[in-house]
Image 1 (spheres, rainbow, N blue to C red):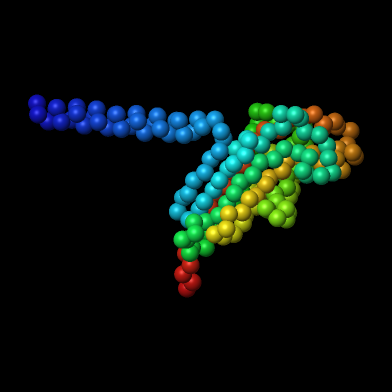
Image 2: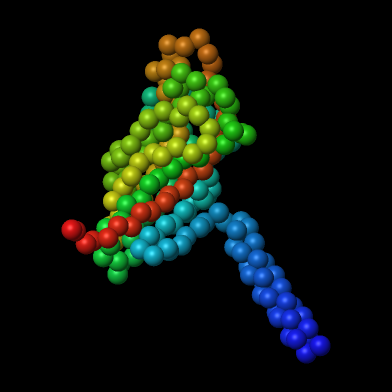
Length: 186
């Protein structure tokens, strides 16, 4: 009888803890400002801006010869200032199947460009499928660096095509992962 009471009290306490923890997580994820930041070991990531980590073209994408005419979002990456471990980060773009016009994914018309906070181009290429795509790998430093990811329609492709790309929609988001490696060399 006494063991049953202890078991029941333990189950109630665990249930209350789980309820409080899940409520806190839900409120954090449901943050309407779309600003996310966090630290995991040496890795420091900050998604800030009007759309957070989301890239969308509510105003529709138009063909352009300049990547700055498209949709964009950015992430600020660094490693903790006390961290001495060599660290790299991968920046990914996930293209949503819902909200992205499939015509954009043909003929290499949809492009991406990644620039750092000095507007130096880090990576560029074409987006041809939905789902995650690794855009670049960067070495992390203790100085926070802003990386802006642009999505745009290349007018060099659309000019030589019979298809009409202007006014099509794009939906996706960026995210980053980090690998931390030992500083010990054998």
